[in-house]
Image (cartoon, rainbow, N blue to C red; front, side, top):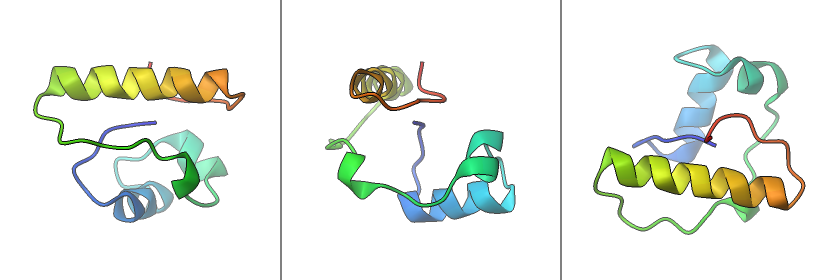
Amino acid sequence: VGQTGKPRPDRFREHLIGYRSSRWVRRHGIRLMPELYPPVDRITSNAEAEEAEAWWAGELEERGYLVRGGH
């Protein structure tokens, strides 16, 4: 779970090559899971983005996923 202004596949690729990356994604990332993406409305502030990120991390944990980031 994280924040980006880039298309998700582009950001995932950056993680995999080590650019401003999470070691968790770099070591364990296999693929994106679009079926788990939250619906995203236009987010207009950092505070709003952080709140949405934390909410989605909690939702995924409730569904039984291990979540790194977003807290």
